[in-house]
Amino acid sequence: MARSLALSLCLLVLFHGCLAYRQQSQYSQSGQNECQINQLQAREPDNRIETEAGRIESWDYNQDDFQCAGVAVQRIIVERNGLHLPSYTNTPRIVYVVQGRGHLGMVMPGCPETFEESEQSDEEQQGSQQQPSQGRQGQGQQGQQESFEQLDRHQRVRRVKEGDVIAIPAGVTTWSYNDGDQSLIFVSLLDISNNHNQLDQNPRRFYLAGNPQDEFNQQGQSRGQSRQQQEQQGRSRRQQQGNNNNNIFAGFDTRLLADALNIDQQTAQQLQGQNDNRPQIVRVQGRLDFIQPPESMREERQLQGQQGQNGFEEVFCHMKIKQNIGKPSLADVFSPQAGRISTLNGFSMPILRHLRLSAERGFLYNNAIHSPHWNLNAHEIVYVIRGSARVQVVNDNGETILDDQVRQGQLFVVPQNHAVLQKAMSNGYEYIAFKTDDNAMMNTMAGRTSVLRALPDVVLANAYQMDREQARNLKYNRQETLALSSSRSFQSQRSWWAVA
Image 1 (cartoon, rainbow, N blue to C red):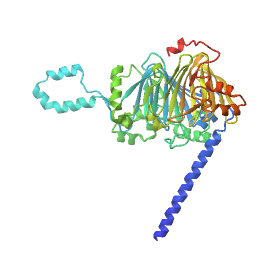
Image 2 (cartoon, rainbow, N blue to C red):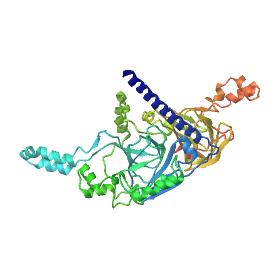
Image 3 (tube, helix red, strand yellow):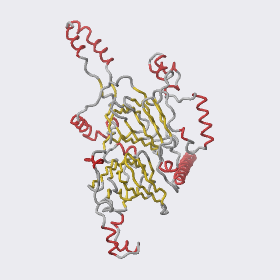
Image 4 (spheres, one colour):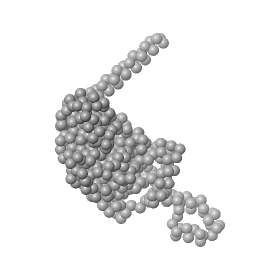
């Protein structure tokens, strides 16, 4: 009996192991097929949703280069006094603030509301001081309870500005508000292939308010599905829910929802957006008045310092989720002739280890060159913030699969191990690159840390049919690392870029 049970358990484990290996092999084979790319191109957004206070643009994630990288990308523009309604996605996100300043709220599940109104207004305090002491003693607890119930409490709201990188885990609710004097622009990468996404290989955003329009499926067929299957599913959803999408509260029965939240049915209908036709970004009447974090840099540094003690930043509720990499003083690589490059990875921002993502921010002066390189362990998705550049990408067959001039607002993908060369044009080149590993590593092909510099000169001489003097010139004619000055330009005109 015991032997039969043990044999059954062994067979069950073996079966599940084979099934898991088969599924993993199929997924790996699918990923390999998706990365058989013969042509890349710089892309602009394929889909646009206009709202009353901004717009949401997205790139078609079904294109071969996006499928290879396993990502989707959005550009979100929030106009002045606009509110991007609370939502969450099925994937981890890494977001860059391209322009403007505003507020971003992030709801970490199970974490306390650390921002709260703890004092009464001056009028309330004066009124309470005029009350007799006996009245205060008799009504103290009841008055305090009523006052406490009226005070607002919420989780931390962060001030964001141009140059900030924000890391957002899968399923975490975020909202943003523009209280600045110009449009607030985010570029957001959704890592669809991340193991935190346990759904399918499609990006999905779940809204908690409004009647949002579909941000992704309007672009075409879903991954792994034929166009006919996608159209049939789309018709089925429209027949069930009507022409517009709804927020997640709308799917619940109104009475059950009211009972669960202990509210009346009218309030429940407002949550469901039954009479609300506004899409994702709405215009605020007046201004949002909420408890804000300290404004001064000194207070902010003190707050960050307190969170950094005793490994506190590793605790989920106290994770540092944003960091600015646009400041010149934070550059990891700087060349007076070429520009500067800043990186952000799991070492400098620990939450990125959890998300398995990283970022690189570059400012290249006119005619400067980003050292040709390949990424050892990550795909690279590059968004052009300002300026333009000549970009070439080469595959394993030595074929040029991208040779184009990219400009502001465009995006291109560099698959893992593919070599890429970028040269700024006369108006300079500013970019943000998202990478699909928290410790993305690159191997440069020119400069002081290049693969050529590390090879013996005799190996270079025999590999490229040159004499040793030529080989040594090849190794040592560049003393820079990542940001390279052009041999055709001896003076950089960078006044506009220095103030960025």
